[in-house]
Length: 261
Image (cartoon, rainbow, N blue to C red; front, side, top):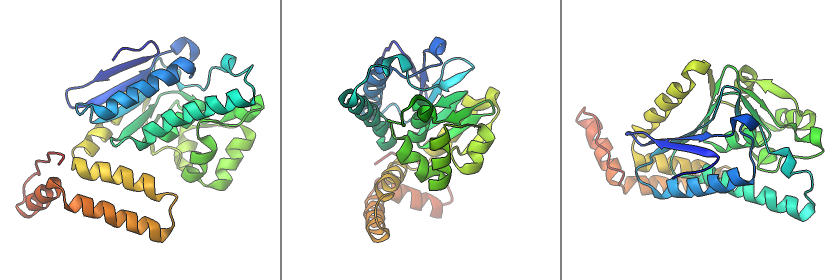
């Protein structure tokens, strides 16, 4: 896969590295990036060789610094709705991908960049990372899921404070409030992301997929509905070859040999 705004590489162990490659624009999202990202995620979903993804930004300054403001200036109501829907669909593709996705945030993650990070399953932040949803400073609101995912991650009060002030926070504060999983040195960010992803990929592939689907499907369900969904996913896991291998390996005191079936 070749793109004009993204770099994509897959290692021998199935880890795909997606790099947003517009460093002169601090990797800002524009229409081309969104189209190419949608195509890449669609291909990854179909490619068994890609077992998980890491998303990061080119250059030392930014993960993704937000939207390309020049593309927003002349938007009217209907155009704004379409732009928001298009971006949200792509980010939802990432969120619903049945393979783990880790955001390796290596600098500014503002506006759409923060929304992109939140759509990933897990977030690691370099010590120089900065997060914010500054859309109100432009007379706008987040359009790619910021008002939806931020309250779910950090709680309503903290989310509203960030949304209504447009304030930017550092990596340590982002970790403290639950926006990122942890902070790591900038020099080891990608290595730490790979180590984390490998620890996920070492588990039963069917179980990993079902965990991702269960959490995504149960977040907005009632407790009773969520428990039924979990039971259904548990049943699916029980019917898998991986479960038989995993449980036998445990009893036989050996490492399991999972086949993803």
